Length: 377
Image (cartoon, rainbow, N blue to C red):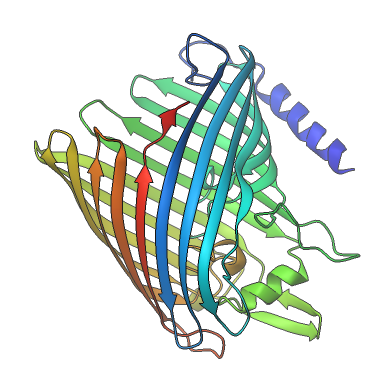
């Protein structure tokens, strides 16, 4: 039944847009190397995290290697595989045993992309959700999904309209469902704009709609420890008090104002229309500057403020960023060595509770990282 539904979804999409002409509608399939069908690049990140509140504390060291590999099967079809290898060590003390250090292999993305027309792209596989969603709603997770996008490009300007149906899972692609529980789903529609010129001007914006359905008891239980309102049906069964369906907005701008400085502005907003107004919205605003110290060295300084109400997002799916029922600020700085190809950065987060409860408390975290730029293999 599920396979038939996905097949029908793709068939309807192809038929709906098959009448589009070639015209100016165009977007490259992949930035492939001209000498072959296969291209790959990789990067390395070494980070240290110190996170603590009144109930838990953790200090971990994380070594992560990420790959991006693309293979052109033909001019209209290509594979996109992005595995990540993580080695993690440290110590964690918490009441629920969460966030313990672990080493594992995960997928940032594993997809097949098909362009039956230059203006239409169909994708299926484990698709990275950051392409469709803001960080307020979703961590950088890969969900089993099918996506269709109508694409338009005119010079430096690009836009797309995307529709996606996905199965929300953990990083191991497990749905966390028990027997007799229905398969969860996440349906999304998003309109995206992107304008980037050669003089360091960059602007992107998006507006989207999302709807979660049939979220399992295990996700509700874990989300209850991270800020969501859940109801305990029995010792082993939990349910969300509200559904999660609503709107999300994003706008990000980088604008050169002097030869030595670029201004960076970012704003995000999420609203869950299925929850009460006092508990249903989340917002994030940040302002920063990129200072060109030398021709090959940039100094970055930024600060931000966020408010995430208890019912704005599914806490289990944004647990690695800001969680829910939080209000606070972020301060970060970094030095980018552009010629040498790496960045050294520091981020501090202070997150207080919007509404007091028994399982959360004020949290402070310090994040240090040394990250290389992507390099070809």
